[in-house]
Length: 251
Image (cartoon, rainbow, N blue to C red):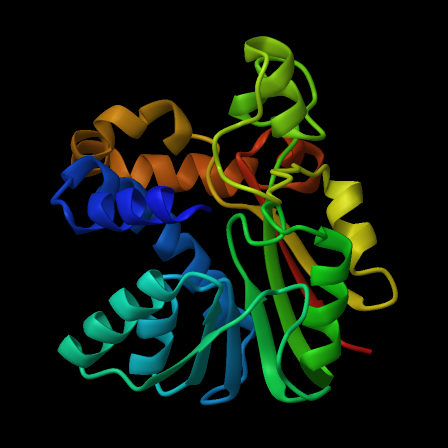
């Protein structure tokens, strides 16, 4: 992102928005339940591309030793402010997932949630770096946007940037170096070939349709939405989820 985009993004995050908070809160609950299912208790975790600490602070409060890495200083500053307010102990590091500033095997677990790999300048290298800094036997959890999800409008997407350019004659406005690639289940699995795949699932197939009314929808039908998502989160359906989540153990 360029500096103007970063400022606007941070500005929006600071504004109260009940629909945004409900929308992201639901995804956070889904992500957190997956992480707690597989992360060893109180282990060291690298939250690569962790931004403003959406997951890191919740994990830190449960006793995990969390390092949050992100290329955007302003987002890390938000994470630090929130962590201090919530009395959560986190470490923040400015860096890029394609060149992690850590020794091999530095962490018991590495997570790269939501669009970290999608937005990487080199998603294949980002996946390799996540594997490298995870210790042998450790857990890697990564999620990526699906090429068949709601943005596809009925056609598969490899590169959102290319689609946007074909429709509007210019690049998608997210700054220099962003590929915005989206994956199929097979493609996401291929990034972690050689590791033991423990589970592949999806975050939500319902919420993208309710985004503008997330607060009211969840208030009225949270249990039903969750039941639908869990029932449909089988591998044969996952390409149609907005995001696909993969859990692997480093071999």
